[in-house]
Amino acid sequence: MSCGQFFNTALSQDFSPDVRYMAYQSYLTAPHLLHQIDNLGYSFYGKTVADIGTGVGILPYLLKERNLSKIIGIDLDKDFLKAARYLNNNENTAYINADGRNIPVKDSVFDSIFVRYVFQHTGMSDIFLSEIKRTIKDGGLLIIADIEDDMNIFYPDLPESSKKLFRIYSEYQKLKGGDRLISKKLPAFLLSHGFKDIKIRPYTLVFFKGSEGSSSPEALKNAFLLVQNELELVKNDILSRKLIASIEFHKGLNDYFKFLNLKDDLLISKTEFLITCKK
Ligand SMILES: C[S@@+](CC[C@H](N)C(=O)[O-])C[C@H]1O[C@@H](n2cnc3c(N)ncnc32)[C@H](O)[C@@H]1O
Image 1: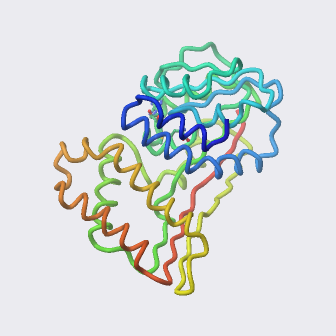
Image 2: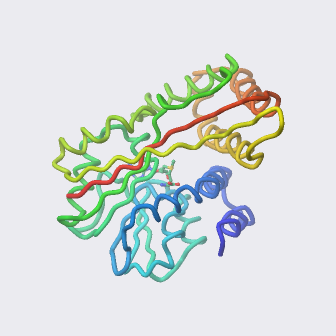
């Protein structure tokens, strides 16, 4: 099944809207994830791998033909895992419904552990990182990918309504224990927990739209869809906490859509970090 089929299958089922948003996010970011995996130069052959905060299981899905011994997707959310099991029930794949801060496996079982877009939700949680360290083998590879909102560039400047919406989203994530400025803090955090051989590989996604046409219309469309899907996942919670009025939420999102579509000579640059280290 290609990534397109992965996504269409997710949509064709009677999954909740949250599962659909997550599946869409996974589908849109899958090419970057694949690129990062290939750039690692790491052989998964015969390895036992964990993917903590697997969501709907895009990583196990992408790795299913790499001859791993086993890949275990772990997530707090039962609905995401139900979809993950449906989308990829490969024999070398298993899923565990658990908190990454309390993983129900013995010590030193994983050759490598992936943690993509999860530290932005947990923040620098000592319990979480200690649990990762406990379950990874000596010399095992920890692979982290996460965001760094301080390295987002918009030219021209975003509309005020969208700026407000993104600021509220960041505050919301902080209220829930997360941090959208996490990547730059992770290397020192890993070092403080005794991880070694830390390698930091920032990677940048750039979208440009000039008056003579867009460098990639598809990429610009995806830039909007990614933000929209991410915000839809948390919209009800943000609104029920009265962090922003519903009308302002939708105006922020609509204005972002117009900003992407109407402006010429538009540039968006988003830098994320791929960080690897060893136990
Ligand atoms: C943004 S999604 C990332 C999904 C997937 N890793 C990817 O790269 O597409 C974050 C996921 O982490 C999960 N998560 C957040 N905190 C967690 C925790 N403490 N333990 C396990 N999973 C967690 C969420 O349920 C969600 O599925």
